Image (cartoon, rainbow, N blue to C red; front, side):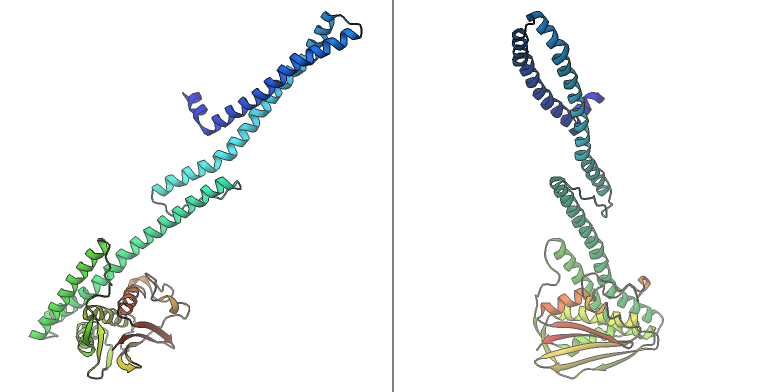
Length: 358
């Protein structure tokens, strides 16, 4: 069975093909030597006075023996070269096979070396490209789950803060409080619908439901939901909000944008720090900014904080979530309305801003 398996392998087939080619070439040569060569040798020996029997015996003793020996040596050399060639071909293939098994086990960082042969190099490049694609897909899957978990935590954190304040008697019950809680529950429901849209190929950030809204009301409602987070850390909040600011936007999306920015400000502002929320008209659009004191964001990370799933690992530890989770969604939601986003951070002051068309 092992012999049959070896013969069916690439190594065995290369060796058999090499032996067959060499045997055919040597067979043709032997036929030529034994047929044409023997007759010519015998004729020349007879012309020089030797008998036909002697000429035939001399040919067998010299040429035939040499042909047999050289044929055997040539076949052995051919077999050796075939084995070397088979190893050169099958070694990269074995490497790809081992890497494929590791890839199937979930090791998406596996890569194979690039051989010198163009055909095998193309195979290695294709495998490495596939492995890189699978690694990216797995990373995106994990990060997407983390991202949406964060977006669900935003309203849940606000709900928990309100319920704790009500339980501790810090905040009295009122119709307004219950209305705010009801709005947050509705937001959770809408987020679940967005997840359904994403699962069916839709987009939770599609520019739908655009209309003219009172920006002041949305800002005040989002700030009211975020006050418990600020109060727990004794953060002073300053609001500068002119009356009558009307923008073209989806109110749910803008509420999500504001709550993300407020949550980030509450998370990264030190206890006793300050947060400034400002809205102003600028060249046909309304600019909303959220400025907080704190560590700041390193200059090298500023161009990337709005990238999908980017984390500022160097200055903000994982226990606080890392900057940028949800900021990619902020960018998508704002740009879906035709607006823009930006961030500046210098000397311990960080300012996130976004603009909306009026």
